[in-house]
Length: 299
Length: 328
Image 1 (cartoon, rainbow over the protein chains, first blue to last red):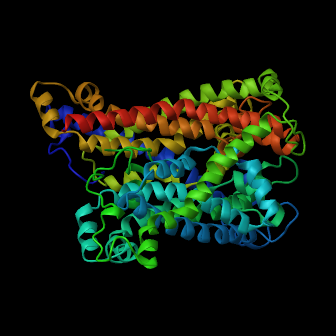
Image 2: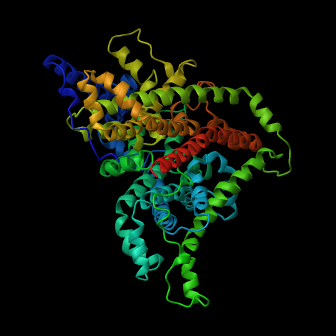
Image 3: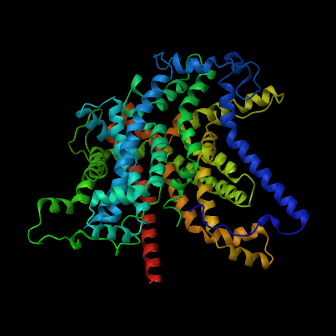
């Protein structure tokens, strides 16, 4: 885990004084260089979402802004025309929200219970069950597109947000089960054993012992599912069309079309709307975001 | 994304309780219905997920596999049609180019992300001030979708709106930076953007690895008079090689599945210069009405993934077993 031991020495405090200074300078210079490189797209897009169109057309995206206005954000939200639909990105933003929230909650809820059942209640072939569920993590989406399209059509969920919720929940359970199972394995079995001797059953142990231990992994699951589903593009593009599409598809719809007049400032604001929710989740839950990354991969 | 250890025995497997040994007060020959039900609770709880996973992983895969050898064209036709679509796929120039692109992109993307990630991790490991600020900056691209990433970087790379324009306006009139519209260079734009997106991921994992290295090892090397770069190269990095393998496997997976980034950045162009297999799959299935060939292409993506992941899973399980043996 990231927050455990750290070597108790200062690598920069070695060598002669001049060498130390030089090393320190190099380290910070490199850090600043990379930080600027990483932040530049964010700065550029924010800046241009406030600039008049003619200024962007005249000077490009990378130039100092003269006049600033928030009206492009309003336009992007409520009246920007995407694929002939002039409701702005608000429509697609709420599509994505309506898709992401239930799918996140459902897949996390299933994952926690599954992880508990798989780690603390051994039964015949349990590792096979776990293996099958986690194979879903690796299966490329392309292998499931045609069958999903058929199934969604059969159950009447073609081109609906409900259909996307189903697809994302089924796929997401693989991830959350994997996360939770690996987390719960570390809970001492003696704790469960003692509770069972006292006569506690499956759900009672879950409520009284596992759930109180779960918040860290619950947060990891919620963050990963939320950002993953919010940012997803392929399923949304294949299974929905027109005004039922998620915001990622809407962005491709307006930015991909090479023809027609471009509205760079409104487009930039729209792109920010698409990026903001996962970015907020990341900034608020950064620690858990990293923990989700490192769990399992680092031993 | 986490690394799978499917089937590996959990740390406390032998400690784990087993339903059969449950110390119940009832007569074992006549358990009540409730008790019998209670014994099967874990299996019943897992059943919906198992059914969904079975459908998703086994049935859907078999289904797509069958479509790929069927006579389907625009609509599914499940009559067996042989492996002709695979042959046709490998004869199509577009597919061959996309697979070549995947190799070049995958190699540069993984190596580049590992290099930048390692560099950033080492820099942050130098007890720098505001560590969490640096980490947040380098990792935030991972929270942003490929669609947003690709859209923004396309504006930056495009000669009309981006860097070239800015340089021209600054007075450097002959400045020329049109990689994104250049057939020979466009793939490197995708590589750069991919590295921008993923190197924070590599950094986070490698940094966690650096922090787990025994400090005494480094002190000993320092006393021997080794310089810091040398200590990292010869002592620290070699000890965390399993992390490099784990990161490589995850990044290779990302590379093979790459789709959204290219769609938003270059749409596979100019021409077919940045086309990747996932784009070909989408086009065949949903644009050209050749779903059998599209399914064949999807199966080839699965094969590429399996080539990366199956050896890795076998290797991690083998290592886990070996570790279990050496520890008694």
